[in-house]
Image (spheres, rainbow, N blue to C red):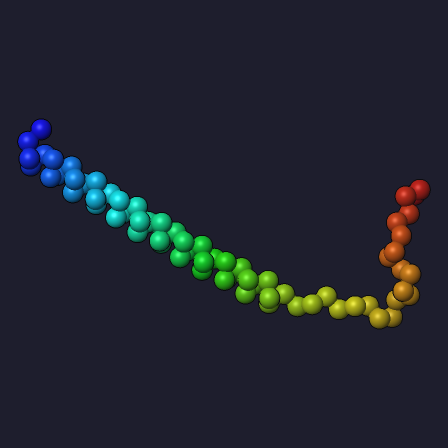
Length: 66
C-alpha cells in the first residue's frame, strides 16, 4: 500500500467517524423534540371531571356472578 492509499484510508475513517457523530447528534435531537411534543400532548389532556351527583359507593365493587 502506498502513502496515498494510507492517507485516503485515514481520511475515509475520520470522515466516517464524523458522519456517525453527526447522525447520533441528530437522532438525539429528534428524540428530545419528540419527548417534548409528547409531554405537551399529555399536559393538554383535560382532567376527568368527577361525577358529584353519584353515590360514593358506586363503582367500588364488581359483580362477578352475572
